[in-house]
Structures are given as C-alpha cells and as structure tokens.
Image (cartoon, rainbow, N blue to C red; front, side, top):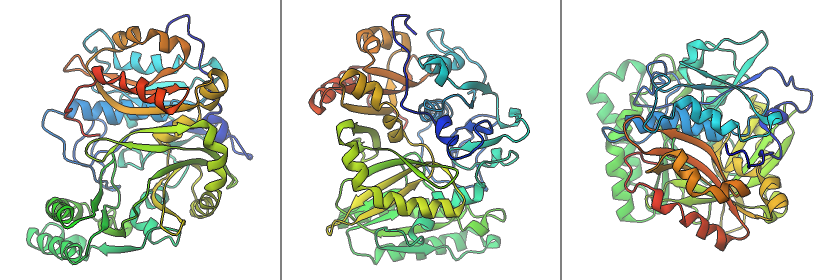
Length: 462
C-alpha cells in the first residue's frame, strides 16, 4: 500500500454486527469459500455432494480462473468488512508465485492492510479445511454449507442454512414471492443410478415446462455464481431454456443421494415473470433477531444477462430503507425463527400492483452489501455519492500496474481494491474493485476507464 494513502475506515464491520445484542463477540470465525458442483477447487476442497449445488459449465482450461474466483476473489471481496475477527482463507495450489512475482498470500494481505488497524481481521491462510483448529467455544460463520466443513462447529446449523438458501423452500415459505409451481423429483435414491429412469424423470419434469405458456421463469434450487435462473419471456426463449435443461435436469437428478435425500435437493421452480428491476436489499440479523439495515443497491448485468456489478446511491438510502422496511421485517421474522442470524441479502422486485416480492434469498454476505459499509468513506468524507462494485473482473495486467495507472484515484480514496488474484498460467488477473464518484454520470465515465484493461470473451463465466 502506498504510504500516502489514508487507511480506510468502514461504517461498521461484521465483527461489530455479530457482537450486538449480547452475542459473544469472540466466538465467530469467518470462513468464506464458494462450492463448485463439478470441479474440485483444490486437492483439499472436493466437490460438495451432501450439500449439492448447481453452476454453469466451464470451458476446458478455465480451471485456474475458477479456483481463483471461488477460493480467492469471492472470499476476499465478501470478507473485506469482516473486522477484528479471525478470517480464514484457503490457498490455491500452495503459496505459488504468479507472473510478476506476486503470491496468493500477498494478494490477500495487501487487501486487508488498506484498512485501519482496528478493523483489520486476524487473517489465517490455510491449505484446506482440515487445517482449521478452533478454540473452545469458537464456531464458523460461512458463505454456503459444504461437506468439507461439516467436521467443524457452525454458528448456524448447516442444514437449516442450506434450506434457507433453497429457492424451493423460499417458494414454499408463504413470504411474498411470485406465484410459483414446484416440480419435485419422484425418483428414489436407489433409482438414481439407472440412466433410463433418470431420462424418463427428466422428460416428465421438462414436459411440465413445455406445457407452460410464456412469460415465466425457471429456477434451479441451489444455483450459485449467477447461474440457475432462466427467463422464458417468449416462445423462442422458452425453446432455448428447454434445450439447455434437457441435460441439466439429468445432472440435477443425479445429485440426490442417501445422505441428502431428506433435504430434497432435486427440483425445479417455475415462477411468474415480473417485468421489474431487481433491487438487492442488504441487512444483518442480530443474535436477538433484530434487523440492521445496510443498504439497497441496483444490479448491473453483462451481455449474457448475468450479474456483473452493483451500484448504490448513498443519498437515497434513507428513503429506500423506509420503502423496504416491511419486506425486511417479515423476512427477518421468518429467517430468525428458522435459526439463522448474520448477514442477509434479498433480491426484491415490484409487481404491477406495487407489491414487493422476494425473488431470491441470499442468506449470507453479498457483493452488493459491501457498498453499504463504504457510505461514510465515500459520501460523507469525500462527497462521492454514487458507488459501484465490480466483481471478478478479468484484467490483462498485474496489480502493481493497475495501481500505478490509477494512482491518483487510489490516493484520493475513490478507488479501492477489495479482491485480487494473479493467475498462475498467464499474466492476467481477477479483481474486485469498488469505485465512487459525485454523480451517476461521472461514475459511468469512471467505470468506463476500466474497459481497456478488461479481457474480452473471458472463459470464466461471471
């Protein structure tokens, strides 16, 4: 970090929030790593089979980027606001030296060193989950339940957490959601190995979708990495969705096994299409069940319709907090009664009658949520009232080069790196940055300055 930069002071941290309302502030250990449904991220992080997830196909040769994204970039960005608590990352393939002389460890340490000393976490970078050793009374707070973490005591029961993340369970929750139809698998665990039965069951489930008239949305129950929501607004889109699902549903059905059948992991959800903007709403549920508002953002999608960035208008937060207070209250009551406390993100749409509807539950930290922790840093202290977070940027440069080219912006505090990974097999990098400007127009111009650094047609799907 350049010596002329002032330390970043966040509005609050996860440590502060976990400490509220009589909770033991010393017993939470943050462990954030994303699961992968088809590829072991590292030798010590195998595919999660009890807690099954769905993600998109990856092109051959993209394994390096996938591991860097799931084990480095996303954990770094979602834990930047961890605060003074133990924070565990996992190393990708050992403490390798990437082109340019940067290691995976130095990338992580450079991020947290930007923070004021009182908000820097106790960073521990380990080879894998088996190397985690907790003190008596400590429990882990996680991103998604994963098999490789089951030997550790959890702050929240992992099966309860998994259920809250399920789009099927959300559709059944009686919370305000779009009208939904759930297609459950009828296969027994003993039938999963029979290719003929799997093909017949997949055909049955897809035929229900074929009989549905557009517009509608099809969702997988435990999708990750901006995957698993398919829009069928027209007959053409419907045909494309059905074509994609013909193979995906077979994979989904085979994820049921004797260890997870009681959680019913194989299903499809059909929902009414709501022609509305999606608003990410972030808050924190304390140990006593009280909700703490963090912020409301706007989503930005890439050319494939997948999430790429979020932005936040700090001057609008008081109004948005009032507007979404009711949906936050009913969600908090439901989630807390299930046994969860911690960070929460809702994706909310508004129907033609003006009713707020929950289209997704993110029962964990989210990228959009991170913007809420920078309100004072940007808006109050620097007059920068519009901010954006760009996640998993595929950049054709090193961190040193990027920081040199944007030196003025880093020194002024208008640009902050909260995640960086130098890739082993190339001179490129994956990055997550937060930036801010006085208004939306200036923020758009600022964001446009990233384009020359971006690698087009990256093999890693966002």
